Image 1 (cartoon, each protein chain N blue to C red):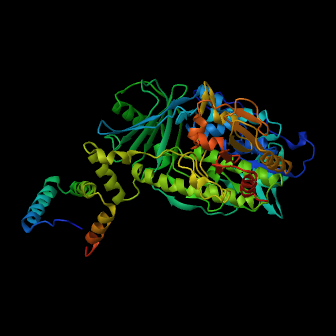
Image 2: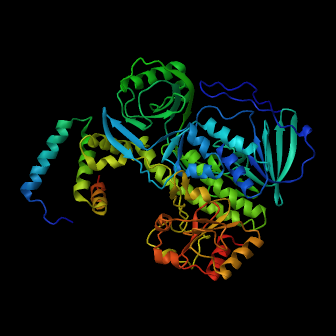
Image 3: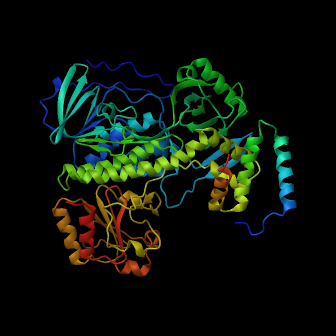
Length: 566
Length: 62
């Protein structure tokens, strides 16, 4: 019998709610489900919310009765916020979050590098916003509760998954005992220590780095702005690196590397934590300032991914699919992109709009993203935590040179998480005008946001299905309208937006005046192109899959057939 | 690779300068000194392919 704790988790700032367990005895007999999502963390809940947007119901299993312990993921990127906007929680994130765009690296008391992340006036969201993960999970959970297609079951722990012909059988334990559930698809969003990954005996590929880092959240009143602080090789922790981030609610994250040979158990002893945090505070000029410990944990840097995310009826996503180092905020930020991708791919399959092999495209794209992230994250990790004597020597040489030599300072750049571009996706149109554009988002790229007016941006108007942006001031040609109508009749979710139209136009679901031509310009079209029906086709995850200087009916037909193969 | 090779006299000066710098840095810091020097030279060279060739030459007959 599964007995999750009913004691609220301790926290200095977050009031944990203990939810009631879902009990099979209180519900009628269950049919086979379309999708069961195992894990109610960010990856699991975003997957469920994306599925629901496409009309696909899911059951979400949460082993515990409360949101996760400690702040965990605290830095969320612009693209993450754009994805969270799609599932309806970006406003709440913005309300409580601390946005930032500067990072500072210190060596021997000197600021040797300052990163300024660009903030384009056409972007709604900051490069990064700090919010503790419990709040993010609360917002996602509230969104799930409002969504009748999501059946979120607290206190339901998956104990066994068996692959059957065309579906999976799940054994689920609850506080009143076990029950069995069948599902066409199982989303393994059960985190870095994925029990499903272990049960299926799947091996991840990549590297594990030696050495441990402590993450500690403390409540303290420090007079520093919300900027990333990195300290290299300080006197109190020679050879090692310390990171600090401001969090909401008067909390600071202190993240420090342990000397070789020290165990996590030793590092997490209260006196050990206290001595090191006091030493760090002394180094930044605040010796003796009062602080309280909220939460601490230990991690090691790993760059590992499953080479395939789809195994029979089971699909891995987020940390269950890959383990990425936290330098560069790649954990949750990658998970959102995974979940968004999985949500729409799986929805198309569950609704019968494409065959199960369509999920291989999801896997190819996201494994490709994971490998790209691993390459980038590996560089940061080798600088932050050198894995060998050679790498340590080079890192130390760069630290030393950076005090006087400008040219080495960019090596401090930690390569923040950025969205992967699916440049070679099989869903990209093969005979559109992509190669003729000289600017604007290309094949596979995430969309370019554009400020339309005060508190009004292009991406506010897009999402939930395929989006066709047609740059036109007049009605769409009838042949083009006929292609749109036929696609919809087959079930394909497709919205048409006329950009540059000051009044409703025939064939478009909405129109944006784009009076100053800003959308047109950011999408790489001249006024002349726009007059000739320049157009973009965005997938449900908003990445570009086709763009044209001249759109016509056969070309749209071809792009839709490529983007969603039957 | 080099447009103007070092003269014998120039090479002798480099030889003495490097030896003295290693002695000045001391046994604990001479590796660090040499790695810093290599990075400065790579920057001056401005060509990662040529640098790779130099590394390979240095790796021979250790």
